[in-house]
Length: 492
Image 1 (cartoon, one colour):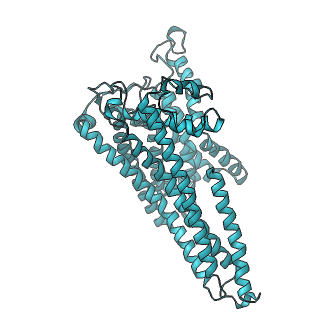
Image 2: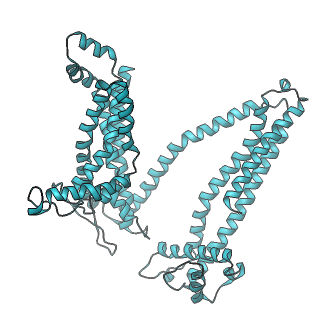
């Protein structure tokens, strides 16, 4: 049974439970709703939620746990001598999953029967051809141990799915029957439903915290594994980034951190003045008609996907900078300082454009929060409007503006796509903004792209980079929020 059908059946059972529970409650009161402890809808909601929520919770946990369990069981079936020297267990497991999916597809398409898929033992060389009939491409003939593992993987998946359907359906039925049997005119349905809703709200509020803790712990333990394979002194104090999957890698974060901070500083140099001046104009000079038109138009920039900004950097800004700085005698300046379209300046300028609405929107709200009485007092003492903005409004709004800038900085540090397409992929120390560099986020993507072996330092270094970036951005966010909170407390 497809997962969608299972969910639809649970929803249908929940809807039926609502009407049946409501009807049973009214029947127990002789049709007079005034004799009920709670409103009739509460009895229906009690039956509906009791039959739906526990079943959906078990379904979600099962879907998360089953792949991990199957991977662990199947990987233990592959002997070490069956793993080629040029491969890893992770790559072999990728072949296993691909063959298992191919067997499932072959059975569903009628290319082979379930018995053939389950009992194929000697036709290893024929597996590739039979799966090729339905468009499943394999890089080489399927080895016996891969086919055996794929068959075990498929059998465990099918068994687990069948057990999941049975358990989820049983829980839904038991919850439905129990809550329906408890439905009576004296049953405190409202109290039970409100307590259940409160529990769901607490769970929803806890998800963000639990997710953050899970992310940090996953990166932390993988970082420990990395430092068990690679020197932490080279990571934090080395000067070269040169991953080599054959060994002898130099994996220092410092060149990546330099590129990250360099590009972020250029982005802030572009975004902060423009965004701040735009906020001053919108809050202090623009009339309501202009403000209602200009502010939404400016904030459209915040909704543009970062990949579009990356294309803008690669196809427009980069070539324009090359034309200005890098065409030699044919260029505008007659020099050749820039050899390609990818550079720190390219990524920094485009990232700064992306951050303009971020800075302007936050700064506009902060400037508008300054009490009007302060402006009136300054104007009443004879100051001009510009003097009032410069000497009264801006000093009062400065803590909040600093917080907005720090939040923008944390956003710039974590950007990926613009840097990938606009800055290049060279990790080095250089003060020249016209040269290509790279950042922490781009290296994380690079190290985890493709079939990777999570037992090598060249792959595990991505988690160390991610944890370092998390600590850096978390520190900026905490500092920014502390400044903004102090500012808001001052003027609330």
